[in-house]
Length: 329
Image (cartoon, rainbow, N blue to C red; front, side, top):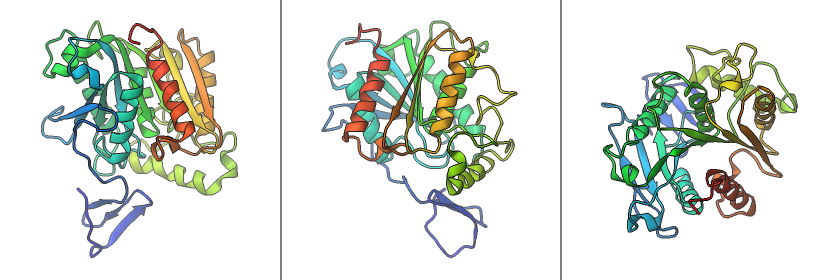
């Protein structure tokens, strides 16, 4: 629940994201706007919302189709399941930042996209976001035989080419789902996660690595974030937040064939992304790992200016990653 009243006493605040009041009300301060699903004038991409993914919850997905698919007959395209960032705490698929980004990405990559809204801390602490995201992925997979509840997925989704992607906390979710995807009954036969794209992933740990110790204020901030969003497992070396911790499952168990890790030079999380890539490459995993570092940019820069040169280059790299098999182009 959002709040705008300043009359209640603040229990704690975690700026710039929000405040929690003693009466239990949560006030989110950024990325609270909402754009309705529609046909985007600039890109021609169409979108619509589907609720009731989990009955009696706020979980929903926003579907996106490239403009030519509205009139074409049963054209199959890769499926992109996207998880938004926001430190697990803020943002939704309908906020302008993510709605505009998915419109642009779908137009560039020519994929069928499913943008997932999961329940967020502090009202719904982790692992609820992971559970909701899994439920949404399984809902997408339920269309594999062409008889699911949504025609856009029945008609246009190629379930041999499913990709998971996200930025920051969303990238964390994508990784954790891919690592769990080898479990029995996780996804039905015929649904294959071909790859994951991790954009400025939110990974962390108890000990500083690389340049993290040089940015004390940012490090202190991130040290406090994980216990806030995951109070039941506040250890910063928990495998959910530190996938290369000593007791974390081997990255060789990732159930996909390729991984793209994207990092930004001025992002304090950059070294975690590089370490993930390096450990994955040496883990015995049989897939292909790639990494791209954007010089001169900070965390999730591309969401603030979609048309700047570096954001355009990043989007093209993602589009190429999703379409490497070429029959879709």
